[in-house]
Image (cartoon, rainbow over the protein chains, first blue to last red):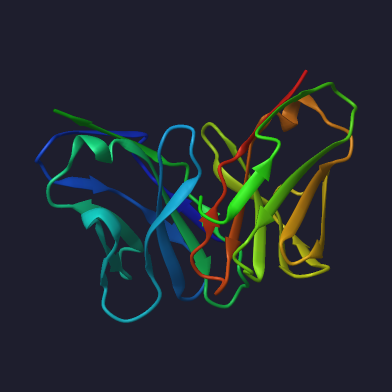
Length: 114
Length: 111
């Protein structure tokens, strides 16, 4: 069975500094990988995905993520964080050969301070 | 949240009563999903549908059933609500089976 680990419950960063949210996964075979963001009292919003091809994926709101197969990681990054990036971030994985079921990590809360 | 509505948005019910949550989409997407969100657990899949009348179980399906008689509607029923089913429930849709798009959620409290 697949699993996703987000090792940090919370990440604190100053506005303007780089932001990194970590994600590692365990899955049989090659994965599809996703990042979502959740603002208070809202549903999740899709940020970006890795399906195939270039290991560096660019997504919405200036976010990007790098797929690292050897380290089974898919860390989310943003070069310069904004206060409005404060939210809950979820990493998710789906095995290529196992239907449409996503497995989510437990989430990382990001707090960007002015 | 575009194109996806959930009803009700909030509900308080008593243990042992049946509860039905509705997800409605206007995007004509093939796939629909029900998740529950609990602190420390992220989102966990309850059931999903890959077409009208085609459904499958997720990782936490016990105590829940679903039905999809039309493309646009996906119903989640708690057959006999328990306190452990107090949660926030999210519906999601997908046309490709890759990225999913989520509704605004239903907060359910079972007393």
